[in-house]
Image (cartoon, rainbow, N blue to C red):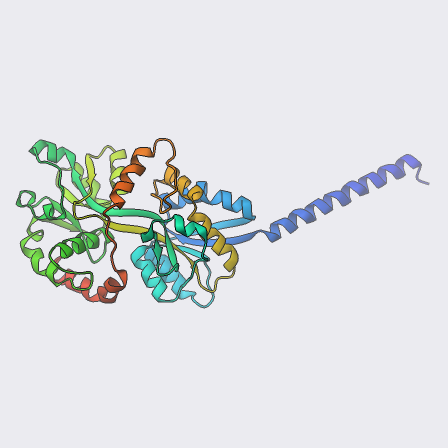
Length: 356
């Protein structure tokens, strides 16, 4: 026969076991309730900044896990298109030109009409709230400060400086058929020649007798640029303030200038994917990413310039943000609908007549 002490111990062990089981069940229940949102975006530096510093506050507040689906804008668009009827992602970040295509393909759901949208630069809201910018940049001109100092040249001030004969064989231009920077540079030149985003005839007509003869090399992207500056081959080229800042951190002698005709807005936009499995939570995330709180962290930790005008610069970023706001004053917006409508023909002509 069990004595009272043994009976008490048995009940105690049983109670502890039941308590442990209950806690385990609660833990499993909490885990089961945690939802996952998949965000298609650029990998690398941008993914690191957002996963480490921007997403966590939202994840904690909403008991959600955000998983990045990394890829270029073209990759992310292709994934969204492939699963259009049963989306695998909830939100996607795309370059503005690619975003315009995504909207026209019916892949985006209109953002909820929220007060945060009124805090954005007007240029950041796309197509009646179908998408909005979370990171704004601009393409202007970069130049090799060492070469300019050695030659006694004044810094460039205009897109037309690319056609100055003194830069013959020293202009490096990204391919306009494959690079956004190159396309921006050509379209600004085209506008100066009297063309429009739809009519690029003036640009193509004048190129061979203006900028064309000065071009040392048409590069597919900007990856090769650092080495061409360091070897003193490249004098002047289209580039963004963010890309220039990254080169300067590597002690590459380079500086950005805002052309007097204006730079070209280069925006990373976000949209909520239509027909996704978590529409309410996806909208909540998209609107959070437009907030001053989220964008201040993206600026401080990733150098992503805000679309929200209310962002207060973190310590050490005051001067950069003030400069950026100055650049925004005369930055130009492209008509991506017009550009995308004729893009295949444009690319074919560029490859055939310019980069031949």
